[in-house]
Image 1: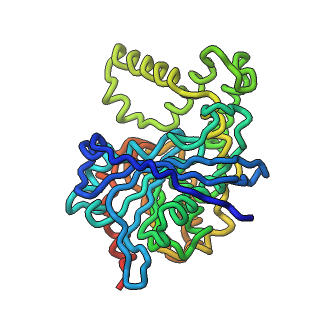
Image 2: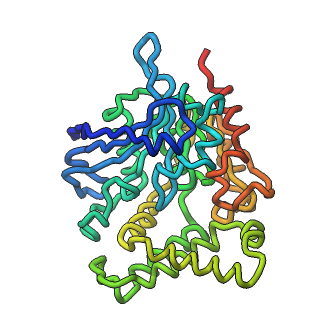
Image 3: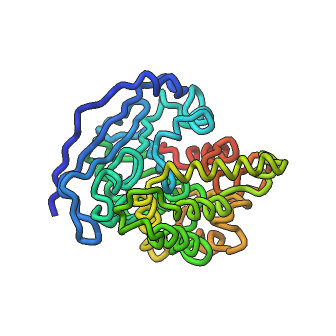
Length: 357
């Protein structure tokens, strides 16, 4: 199969973006288009738009190979933009920090179905091709390799869904990166309560009588049920009690969840959770060649440590290491993945271990 690609040369240098990012390097935001993209389902999309943000400048070695590119992949329902916030960029991308944007070329893509990349809510709704994590990773590779002309990654890392994509990157393109860091994930098919949660979300939306196979004209109440389930699974009991210590504060937090649900698109959300159904890197873990640090937190209800999955599976990764962060005032349940203040020291250790001579 020949996939024709082209870049939309509408790169906008965003001064607002620079202002919120502690980076002395250039920041760019653009779209890359893949023509006639064929999904694993056999469906095609004439023009697959992949949105991205980059910080810094790619630097090549004497052989012309890029050596400083870092790919960071977001979680379900997210986009690359939140990584520019103070909580993440303020800890990692500034001068002298682990991923200093004056030194590294940082790539923040929006996955298929997310952010400003092609997604059902663009107009196709339920006629949008059904995609899975393998499609998403292959599209990211085309963006990085063909679009940005990056032939090697210093580091590939991601949060939640992006962490699962990180495992797949290591298997599908084992010679393409120096290091891998999945944050809040497991390298096995999604089963148990995690899978049931996703079934609940999908059923809440598809089972809503106002959904009309994606052609809804009124707010879908099933989105409220989906958000309620997500809140319980992804929040930290300790932190939520601290942030809402009274009945009134807890009631207001509940109203915020409802307001958040009203801003979601039902078609996008159901596709996002259905895309995880075929994920299963377990059989190919031995193909991963780069050092890999898998970081989870003890208060993560999505990937609870008592399952023992990572202790068992990390042994199959030739250069793998499992790190379990204990519950503390700094952890946030599943959301600890986006708090590098908790895990940055392990990132530094990984960069040191994978440094080329």
